[in-house]
Length: 93
Image (tube, rainbow, N blue to C red; front, side, top):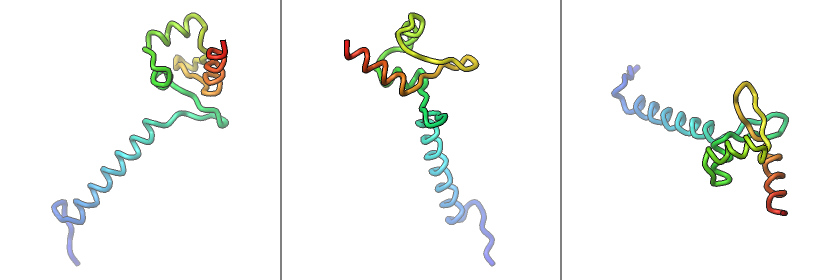
């Protein structure tokens, strides 16, 4: 029976595959949005990217009540359904 060490090609291939898998999982987690009862929640970054606005503009919109949001233990989230409804109302005017 052959003993494999870190320098063997089989072990090196295994660790390379594991690194690629960890990168893929990390990207998937980074790009996912939290869900609760089928409702998607978006972060400040998600909203800024979606609307192509700065975080300061988004904060102004929150402060003036222009965009719907919820706050849970200091974390600000946006219900995707409410944001889409809000956008439709804004473009209908």
